[in-house]
Length: 456
Image 1 (spheres, one colour):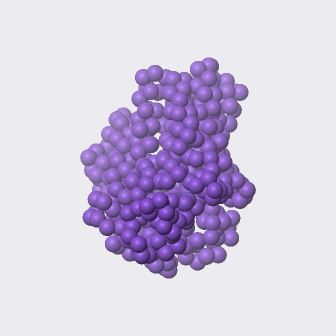
Image 2: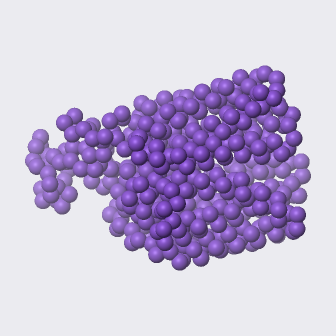
Image 3: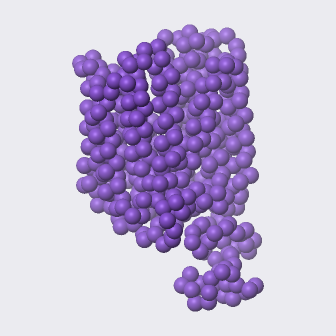
């Protein structure tokens, strides 16, 4: 899997992602301590609101950033967003009011909502071979998981020597390092965008692409299944560990570490698995694991905590991590397959926005249900959401799902460049090719039964 690091451009971009993630992780720890200093016992409410603001920024800003990516060079856009995040991080030690926390969080996450989809859309152009791109997706998944383990440990080490507000200096350094690495990378020239219309039309194109493409609608349903299972891990772990199992604070890190370990193991194995199996054959069974595990969590939290049930919970968290990774990691392949090269920024921006809208739904649901109805009901409800989402994805994603589709054009005039290989039939022009939604293909046709192709 490390062979993709031989590509200099990808090596620089991946390193930029890693150092930016470390900076973000340090900021997460420092923001928690800052919120406690300002709000005291109300710090949880402040952080919960900040998390909601983060999701709102992701959902609202990413499509606009995808529309702007055709007008601004990608390297310039990513560097500008890194410098913006570095500048905002420099102001954090001077924050003294709750509203200032909310404002800085919004600015940080708005910049991330512009940076991340642009970064994601660049990688398949840097690594056009599918095997290399698959390995890059697994590397990215590993980077996220390792950051969740490394950043808190690094923060704890630094806090033994410096006050917590110095962690924001590390955040700034991470974003500046990311900007420098992006500047040093030679990026391929993106394909020209042929879409017409204003900023709004370009901003909504990615969402229209998702709604019009069956496998992308299924991907959105799978994102909801992951968000339902992930929410109980990220929102309720501390309550499960401290209140139900009466474990010390360090056990919270152990439980979250189990989730991360499961995710990393799946990410390491997936490149080999995806050589032999299609994305659909991997992602759908993994999605159905999630409601089954959540049903087990509901049963575990309904009974008394014991040594065996604690071990079972750690296993459940690891299994959720592995299943979530098996769903999320191939998602980039599905998006790449479903959009033209020039539309990849819009497609990844839409995926970023729509997937985080799922988290915006499940995060508060997990919190409110746990506070009002208890942990067993929370796990059962989120399990039902995951089951409905996995079932919906199975229905939405055709089992055959060929890349090439035969279809008829009735709106294009004779002699149009797109019809170079078409023949006149049924009152229009008939041909077949790798089919994606674009300016010439507004809706999804039914695949011709005479042209089967294996799903990827």
